[in-house]
Amino acid sequence: MRFGDYPSLNFGPRRAGAVPDMIVLHYTAMPSCAEARARLCDPAAEVSAHYLISEAGVVEALVPEELRAWHAGAGAWGAVRDVNSRSIGIELANGGGLPFPEPQMAALEALLADVMRRWSIPAHRVIWHSDMAPGRKGDPGARFDWRRLALAGFSVWPEEDAATEMTFPDAARRFGYPNVADDLLLAAFRLRFRPMATGPLDATDVAMAANLARRFAVDVTTSDA
Image (tube, rainbow, N blue to C red; front, side):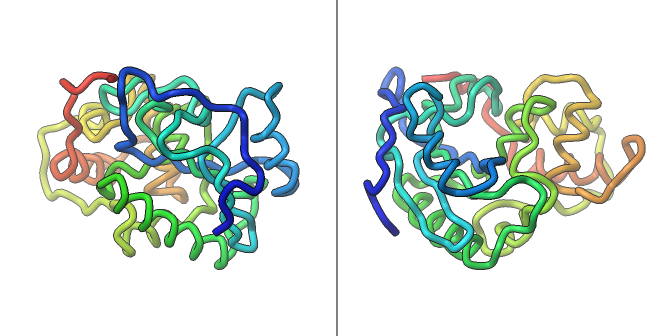
């Protein structure tokens, strides 16, 4: 891991004494890692992340973890509205349509283990950019192996509850998804947990969302710091 090779100037203090209790994963959606790095370090772009991981698995630290990087933008997770103040942002160099190479995934897993241990972040607080901003963001996309992270303990994966009285929107929002239109909510949920699913809401969507809500319901009383 290389620290400080390409320091970004795009950061500020975490607001109201907040500390990281979430991790948000992104893809860069740019042709190359070098171009992504340049943008994340360009003051005019007003965007950054704490880490950038190249296709070859090189991890570059761009913003110190204790500071607020500008990676999440508008969105929410549970009661958290200022996601930037409460999260660590990790960018994966990927244009959006390609698989994520093994060296990159291995480097991500090593980085997640380190960051989660350092800040005591549980696996269910590792989310996608598209989770917190349904309809506005789609990264890291359907080619990302989210189940792999869950099996390694760096994320969570739903089982199917046999029966539930919860509706799909209620269950998804209890898990953390923001209050958006039901179609956007379903699209974001499937992008992460059922990327090959098509058609209208079905019983599997409901059962999976209910299981996540039962196991990892967010505390909606905990507002932004």
